[in-house]
Length: 282
Image 1 (cartoon, helix red, strand yellow):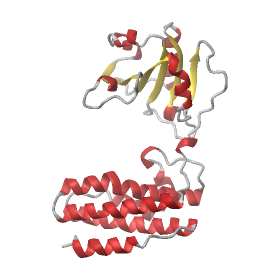
Image 2 (cartoon, one colour):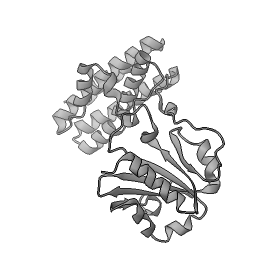
Image 3 (cartoon, helix red, strand yellow):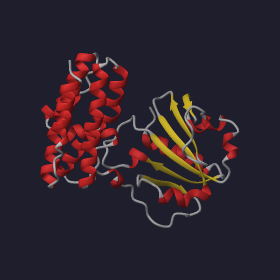
Image 4 (cartoon, one colour):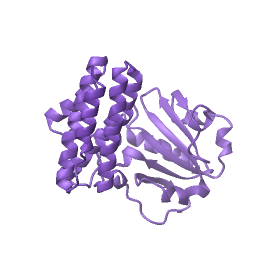
C-alpha cells in the first residue's frame, strides 16, 4: 500500500502538470487531528478546474492515480440522482488498497465551496493564490451539541412513537418492516440520546465520529455491551429482546439527560410502554 506522503505528492504532481486544475484540497478524516491515523482512511480530494467537460469525455486520464479495481461515478447514475449540482465525482478503489474520493469542482464555485465547507479542509496547491487567509482544518461542525428542551423532547417523542411500529411489526411477523424502523429510526435516536449524555459528562467540544463510531470510547463497559446486544436480530425472539433492551437503554439515558439539563422527562414513556405491553405482546 502506498504511504500517505506518496499519495499527497501524487495529487500535487497531477495538479502541477495540468494547467486546467488551478487549486486542490484534501478533505475529511485525513485532515482531522482528532482521528487516529490508519492506512485505510480514504483520500478525499477536490480539484478546482476551468474546464469540467474535458475530464468527462473519457476516464483514461484517471490511470495516473494507479491500478484501478473499481470506480463509481455518482453523477452518471440514474437510480441515485446527483446531489452535487455542477460538480462531478469519482469514487475509486485501487489494487493496493487505496481508496480515493475525487471531486471536480468548477473554479468559479470556489467561494460557494468555502462558504459551505464542513471545516475539514487542507489546501494542497493554490496556483493563483485565490485563498488569501490561512485555513486550519477543524471538526467543530461535528461536535456534540447540547440539546435544547425542544430537541430533547423531539428525540423522545420520535423514539416512543416509532417504538409502536417496531412492536406491531414484530407481532405481525412483519420482520423487515419492524427491523427497518428499528435500525433506521429507533437506534439512531438512542445513539443521539447517548451522545448527549456523553457530552454532558465529557464536554460539548468534540465529536464521537461519523455514525457514532467513537462513542464506544465514552461508554461504561456494561452499557456498551448492552448497546451491542441491541444488534442481535437473527429472529423474532432475538429481535424482541433487542427491542426491549433498546427501550431500557433509551429510558435510562434520557432520564440522565433530563435530570442533568433540568428538562421535564416525558410522561408518554410510561403510557407508550403500557400501550405496547397491552396491545402488541403475545
